[in-house]
Image (cartoon, rainbow, N blue to C red):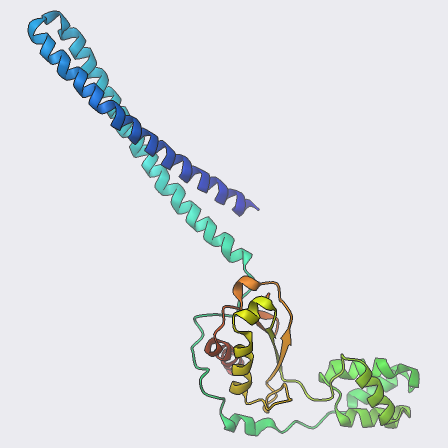
Length: 285
Ligand code: FES
C-alpha cells in the first residue's frame, strides 16, 4: 500500500513538474517579444527625450530579473522532474513485480524443449517395490473395521500418491474387505488414482485466455517432450504427471502452467518443456 501511494505521489510530481515547465515556456514565449519591443521603443525614445532614460533602465532591470528568475526556477524544476521520474520508474517496477504471481521462470529458461528426453533416463522407470509396513501400521492404528474403507483408501492415496495393487491386496488381507469392494469404492470417488503419479505435478491451464494463447500446443509439446503415450498422464520415469485445469486466475500471463505450485507464464512450447528440464536439473544439482 505504501509503495502504491509513493508511486502515485512520484507520478503526480512528474506531472506537476512537466506542467510548470510547459507553462513557463509558454509564458516566456509570449512575453519575450513584448519586452524586447518595449525596450527597443524606449531606447529610440531616449534619443529624443533624455527623461525616459530612468524608465528604460528600470524596464531593462525588470526584464533581466524576470528572465533570471525563470531560468533558475526552471533549473530547479528540471532536477525535481528527473528525481521524481526516477523514483516513479523504480516504484512502478516494484509495484508490477509484487502484483505478479510467483514465476518459476520465462525467457531465462534455455529453449531446449525440441528434443524428447533421453530414453536412457526412461530406462530407470521400473517402479520401486512398495513398502507395505505403512498398511500394517494403518490397520493397526484404526482397527480392521470395514467401515474404515474410505479412511484407509485416503491414507494410502496420501502416502503413495495413488492406490498400489499390492497395498490394496494387503489391506484386503488385514481387514477382510474384498479387493472388488475396495476397487468399487475407489472408482466411485474421483480423488483416487489407481496408477502411479510422477514426482512433480504439472497443471496446464486450459481456461479461455490460455486456450486462445496456445494451451493445447503447450500440453501437446509437454506430452511429446516427456514421451507420454496417449491415454496416460505420467512419463515412464515417473517424474512428471500432467493435467489440465481451468483458469488459474493469472490470465495476463497466458498461457500458464503450474509446476509443484509454482506458476510459469507467457509460455511457448519450447519454454514450457525447458521449464520441466529446469525442474529436473534443479533436482539433480
Ligand atoms: S485462462 Fe489461464 S490463467 Fe486464466
